Image (cartoon, rainbow, N blue to C red; front, side, top):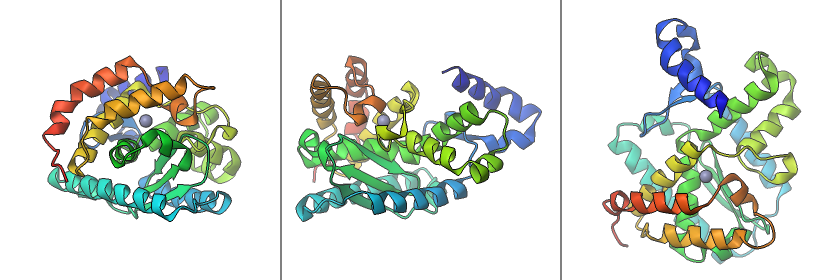
Length: 274
Ligand SMILES: [Zn+2]
């Protein structure tokens, strides 16, 4: 994306030298060190997240199957602990400040899952036939949680705000255009196609989420080789009637699977079978 390149340049070249005030608009992805556009303060992301998540739970039906819910919570908490351990080892625990993890399963045919800032994770029952196993679910949850802890949502939301409001001050946009701001949030976090065209995650973000997700699932005791099987099943699913929501934000192709295979030896170093 052109904007992406522009802002990366801005972050790298202009900001450190001249406009130190603009520093707040750039941050660094934990772990990979990549510079990213980040217009929204972390505290604002967390409060918006809590609000949108609460709203989502009020308007969507939680799954009745307690066994499936227990599975989502168990796998989710395993990934959570792996993330906390990984960040602790890298001296980055501060980045998880304000996280208050929650894992929920909603009744829906959508093949979808997401994680909002602050660790609010939702899995849709429609994706369970594709995940099939605990390890398959760990692939999805590891990937989505990786997007969140790498702050890809802030990056997408920032890009959305710039595209839609251009020069308007961020605070003004957030305060005076609540409907449009909410819509950008929904699209940034992949909450259903009814909110309009989904912003695709960039290739870089996808690749980061795959890479980190593999490490997190391995640390949680799930065999990362399962990621290849899962993405092959997703690919087969795509061949059905129209791409499911998860797929439309997560372009799956041979390249992705090939990249995952390249990342596997590193992930295997973190893998301790349960
Ligand atoms: Zn993704």
